Length: 328
Image (cartoon, rainbow, N blue to C red):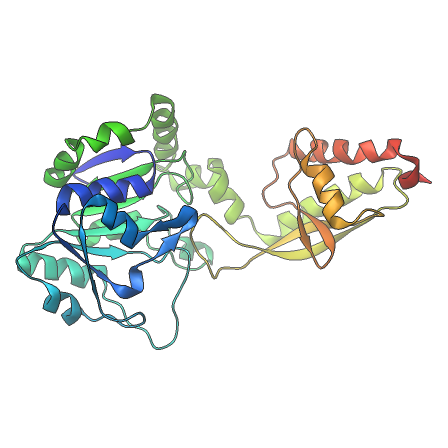
């Protein structure tokens, strides 16, 4: 359990205000292999620059040792930073320092340690047969002084940036004038609170937080959904359309689990229209039907569909029945 917490409008803001508060005008030590860029051109070196910190990069791209951090510490060092490579992985001849070892080093020199976790995750996905992703609880247990992560993405709430841990540091961040500029509104706070309440019971969270339920849906229910959609589409009087169920691969997105392939099922559509034109028509439907194109086929993937979405898809294709070139 964290000593204290502060919420701002996204994780980039959480990183910015934390660095600005704890290391303005001083050095922040970070591994070269963790100078990441995520979506929206969020780059750690540039965030540090705008936070008023001095970047002190150590190690090499593929290997960073504990002695690299220790050798870089001097009288101008304010913070040790570790960044989770949430949207890519490095494999092969690599080495990184564990958060536990970095915390111990910070204690040795009296320096705070901050972890940018990126996509906040409260669920150990390895229990459900997926790849392991570091959880917020594990990072807190390691003894970090500050951890930042997103309130959306894998956590599944509204967009927000959450800052947790030592009360003395959180209170300093709270008093930063940037806090007012970066604060969230009451509606977002209410949505975040409602989401976090679900996590008091993991089974409840898995059932009622859409992103978790979608990621962990097994193959067979997805195949059943795809067959249901196929059956409905084949009942339409669209002789020039061909529909079939195909197996496909999903990615989690949200800057997390970048190498994980999730097996899913989709209805593949072929028609007299090019896949690009058909996709455009469906996207301009009200409500928009979001599809993707693979191997010159338009795919309607069922993983992220809600029960009420199927009738909207059928309704969108029913409009083609009014065009004789698709029904003759």
